[in-house]
Structure formats: structure tokens, C-alpha cells
Length: 125
Image 1 (cartoon, one colour):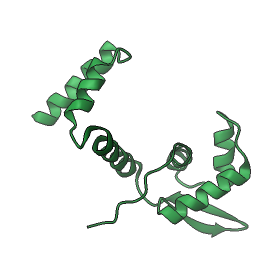
Image 2 (cartoon, helix red, strand yellow; image 1 turned 180 degrees about the vertical axis):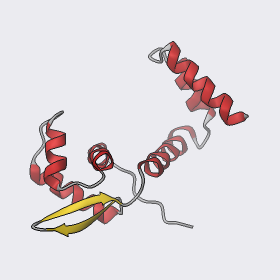
Image 3 (cartoon, helix red, strand yellow; image 1 turned 135 degrees about the vertical axis):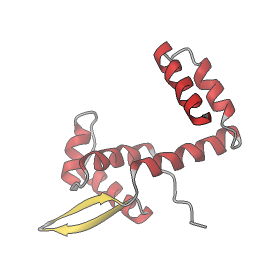
Image 4 (tube, helix red, strand yellow; image 1 turned 30 degrees about the vertical axis):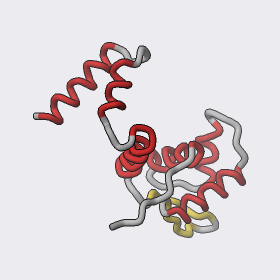
């Protein structure tokens, strides 16, 4: 059985989303993408990307004077793992309470409710 990877922090997930979107990225690429939505130090991004490599989420290759990072795991696998961990931690592994919460949530639009029901129906078929 595979050893579970440590879950991602909010900041680590933001970095991973940039790398998944770009395919490969330097620290500068990620730094500039994150600057569009918030203030962050270049050295913080560099440190976080090194941590993500240590955790097994990123791989790096030397490219001239800079390193290029690429995802070590696909986005779908990481997000799926995070959702499973959340369901296990918050709902004791039961998916039903999560679905009930989503359906009853007043912030869910009618269109989103319909889509959720369609997805559940298709999964059952």
C-alpha cells in the first residue's frame, strides 16, 4: 500500500494550481502568477516550491540558470486524495452527509443542484 502524501496547505495548493495550469514553471513564473491575486514574496514561493518537491508533489530539472518544476502527480489524483481526506476527517468517511450539506446549502444555485443530481444519477447508472 502506498504511503499517503501529506495534505497540501492553502498556499501549497495555490502554487500547485499554477504549475498544473502551466505544465512546467519556474519560481518566477509562479511568483508572477500569484502576484496577480495577492502579495507574496519571491523567496516564499521558492521555499514553498522546494517543500512541494520534498513532499513529492513537484519534480525539478535544471534549465540554464533556473530550475523548471513540473507536477509529479496529476491534479485529479491530488484533489481526489484531498477530498477523501476531508470526508474521512469531517464526516468519518461517509459521503452522504457531504452530499446532503451541498444540496441543502443555500449558496448552491439551482443549476449547480441540477448538475449535482445529474452526476449522482450518472454514477448510479
